Image 1: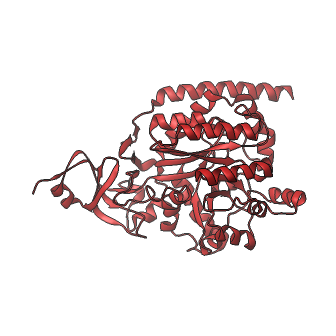
Image 2 (image 1 turned 60 degrees about the vertical axis):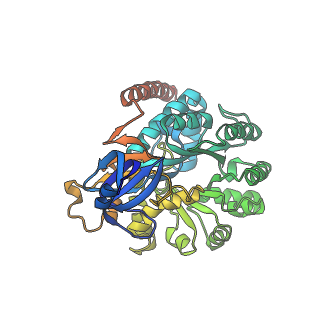
Image 3 (image 1 turned 135 degrees about the horizontal axis):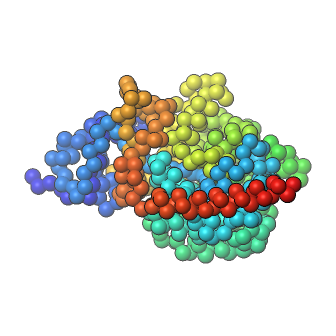
Length: 448
């Protein structure tokens, strides 16, 4: 019988498709054709049935769906380590916002985004959601490097280098939405920064436009106790109650952080099908609090994972984030089974795709879905012995063992080498920014 033609065959010791639950396929292969997963089958049978242009024989690797970073600020990667060991509002008001006013530009965001994309690919991320100034540059760099992205147009009431008021933020964002309306990898949504930086009038306009365009909305929500206290003083409402009155709660809403929640908040989220983006390491570093993962999961709320920006994390390592999420959930709940290894992996893959409205095409390894794939080498000494590869992925610090990444069947990292990013040139650009920013910071500190 004649062999079928396909683009690529990826053979590995373990394939972990995520759907169905807890399944691990041993000695299987993925067949990739025209950017999609065409078949998943026993490796011997795959070699008998298919003739492929490219074959990857990955030995003692685990193959998983590409990791999804559901919340971040890619351009801010150039501020990594600029202001550490501070609570959120002091970090924002006294350090980050002043630095942004001084440095953020199209060039800054383009270079910071390229640095972020390089780091994310090296940590197995094939799709990221981003909320930052100059989203046109974020989209441009994501397009250049062929990574999947959901880019949220930022909306605030105060001016920045990108826009002067909420109306201009929205107007510019809609133009970007039109530019990428039919893009194969990039989608555009709305990113109202937070309840304390966006007015009711702007929220109502965002809701109307999101309904009209069927576009996602992402917002920092219930991030700190201070946010809730101020909201109650000003309006007598918790932030989520205010958003509910304004009609923002829906399956399109991606609620980032949610460290301060009560039972009424949880029911509002569940009843309206909202998603939560959990950013455990950023929340820990800024001492913002703990998202009650176990209680939220018990109520059927979809929870995805995000790294947040490198300025508050300070890395974009998704497997590190997954491990932190799993361990923190156990510690907070005093239950070792609150978030299992498989559930944690699902949060970083399928749940992320669902939160971004992309679960029909990514988030699991299934026939007909996009070939967004990450491969991890489990041959090293620290991984031995292997009883359960899912356990190893979550608990044994595998990030440096990620060897290959594909997005829509394109190899963006091959044997730990990025295929489209000149790392030496990137390092030089970053060093220039570091020296400029460090000199300015030193000068400012000398003036005080």
